[in-house]
Length: 274
Image (cartoon, rainbow, N blue to C red; front, side, top):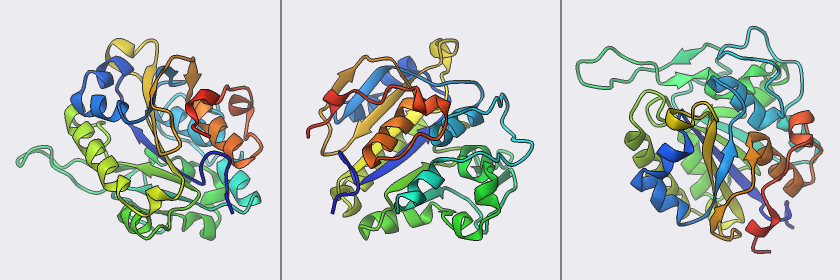
């Protein structure tokens, strides 16, 4: 039995702080866009990071204009919509300590052998942990896991209907050059492509949280959608992070979470093969 109209599973991966122009100039990204549908008139919603992550899963920025939520958000997210439909979800975060850890950061990485250690995990990039309904619910909190589980699930064909993947601060490009992050991204995509999970009507959505460089003011970012059910090519419709959420909702027959996704245009119908 099919769970969704166009796909049964979706993996959302969010990279950091690059405008569409800069991303498209990178050879690793250029190789990826040839494989799927890509959107050159796609926009983030705010600066800095966290409001954009919240928009991607809850249809609102909640008026937040910084990276640290002062109190748990008491509004719903896509989690409630998925669970009401009997669909599964999981958030995979690199270097996440587990156990519903609510600290702002964790882990140690070194940009150079002699550099001061840098925290690798950032809670601001794992939006589910901003919500009271997840923080206060051990069952839901257990669905936020270390990303070591992701490829195990993918190879076993056991990915949930909805997966959100948060690379660490080196792999997402937050603390590293664009090329470092895109080499990681291309390897991630190549590794996922050959798994049992990717063969099960699975869609991979990749975007950047907010624009940078020449696209800082416009907040234009790149979005790429990969999967067997996609018609590859460039699409120029104006879209936002709310559009990705609305597309997932429409596919699974979910009610919108908030005004942002309720009023957003989904990805254009012409991208689908079926």
